[in-house]
Image (cartoon, rainbow, N blue to C red):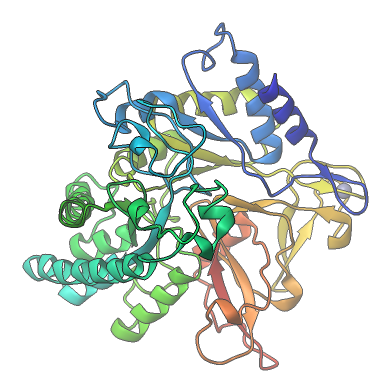
Length: 478
Ligand SMILES: [Zn+2]
């Protein structure tokens, strides 16, 4: 009943300042697909249908496959198929399975402690450091031996950086954030007690992030990782990072885990650094972004099912977190197709989402996809039903990296945008001439995936291409 009501409310949306029902950005909803709800005739099929309608209209919920998760997430003593099911934090971070098997003897002092049950709520992550796989590849000059040697060096650098994060947390007193450490948000420690015991033994995690698997593989092998000839190398790279995490975990008694970093502004920073170090290498460094985690490159023609099946193999090797997307058009009149994708997710991949397009025109009431059209080299939002072009009279929601944004990508400011397979790169403008950091971002604006895609296809994305009136533009990925 609670699930049903939650879905109904989300389907309805929330009222904006003008009283129009729109797609809320938060909170994100996650729906677990399981034997009891995934097929017609199962007891909770009606909820799954409702979830499909909600996804088509409001982009959430996202989907966890109980079947796949029970295969992968094995806490102490569990066997494949009987593992744990728990949600991610934010858009994609997953905790490691509870390796104590008993909620760590309640070291956090939780009042709802249940002996013998694995614990997932209250645990946390100590931070992430991301390795730029494209840089490793380019630094090797296509020499495989050199590649693995440089990879070792870079991983060691990541390890040391992660230990800096860890050591900085060490000795923190619970008084630093009483709501977190004393009042039960994360733990109920004594006043003046250090948090250190929660940093070890796998109670919390620490993440090795990675980015640009596609470009790395493309440079080293000349082929995309979706090519059968190149895929083994791609998987080997993933396994190598997992092995490094396992070694560090053994050494430090901290749960290192491999994580498909969302990247955010880092993708831009990485891309710019690559261009600076290696120049414009066609197909590798010639964009203002690099491909996120293990994702299939945006330019590849691949259907939703093939993509999910392919990425599932990589997601399994990204236990600290990852998400796969499929891009779909407005699906509100094709709920059966949404359900088919959901059933495919259940059988094939642990965690995935559909990026749909559902907007609202306040002039005529149209609630499908507001389109992007190019008009005199400017991109404008147009209602396909009535032709309305007034952004103040329409509502557009697009997913940007696991989260939904509902503001306009602002053409007037000429922001540039590009897409990385369902994840959006959103344009922002900044005045300082050095490369932008988080503080330089004046304001974020949403990008339309289609437009992003078109722009990426045309190779028109460049952080300083639209350069006039002293205002420079950049790309940011959220
Ligand atoms: Zn309209």
